[in-house]
Length: 113
Length: 114
Image (cartoon, rainbow over all chains, first blue to last red; front, top):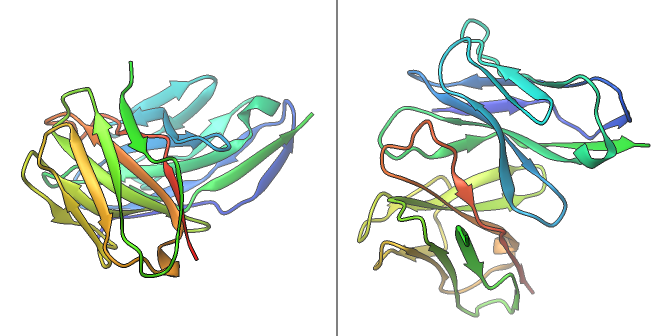
């Protein structure tokens, strides 16, 4: 079945540091890939997505590229801010007609001033 | 612009009690989902629905039942709550044909079973 493996945290960075959170997946067919963010006490919000190989999703300075050859969708940001502190989830929507999401376990990011 | 609304937001139950969580969406979405979130486990799918009157099991369905009598509502029931069901529950929805579209999530229901 489908699965998502993402870098375990917690990750602690200083403001303006470079961020990478690794995500790899296993899926049949051609999944759509997503990064969701969860701020403390809130639900999940879409951060970015990519629907086919070599697509780059971007939002709020975050980027991720759909790499089919390495089955990866790593999240990057060049300069993090304190307000980026949150839990980040990598997810995929695989083949089939139910469009359910398969999530990674989440990575807690803390950014210190 | 309500989107996906979950009620209640918090609830404490005793072992063996029953309750129903309500998810309501005002976007006319066809597909709806219930997930649970546990520390270190990510989100896991409990049940889902691909349309009014339909339901199907997800990854962790045991101990839960669901109903989708109206397109806009998806109910999750616990018939006899157990401490292992202490979790944060999220509802989500997407429109018909929405595999490449992101799911819209509610703010969650935090449920504690004593």
